[in-house]
Length: 105
Length: 105
Image 1 (spheres, chains in turn green, cyan):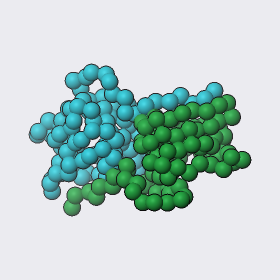
Image 2 (cartoon, chains in turn brown, cyan):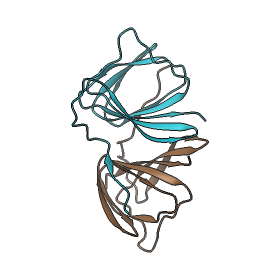
Image 3 (cartoon, each protein chain N blue to C red):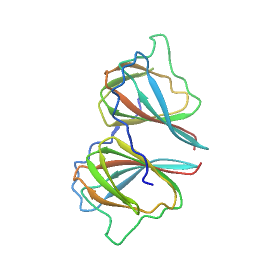
């Protein structure tokens, strides 16, 4: 049987909430697809995660805020957010889709 | 210091060979960006891998061949290729970029 195909850019569903799809998991990592629908982090909220995260914006535009400043992201941009580096999402376009890997070494 | 950004779609380099960039590695996975430049597998060659692979074509078009048949891929398509499922790349567009995770559970 041929492997099933899942298209990561398809985000035609309408939602008022961010949707996280867990795509894959191993003992030291978890791969997620995150469909943002324009959702932002609450302004008084910071992510402060116990594990490091590799994140790639594969569709759309977004802005990540760190304590040191902001990063504007265009489609294709990827970065590593070390554990306990505080961050939030201050803007996403309606069509924004991310891949994220939470991992330990 | 703000995290460094790497754009995964930028493949403006000219190459006659496929280029594999190792982006991230943990004890149970390895994340790679593969820039194909239109390169195909040799016709008498099959990949036969000891670990499972999640692969996503994030830019361009490509065709994967399995013993059971072919899969035409468009940008955004992702699939899981179990360990020891033989496959080859029979076509890639010049601008094709992949993400691949080799992993064990």
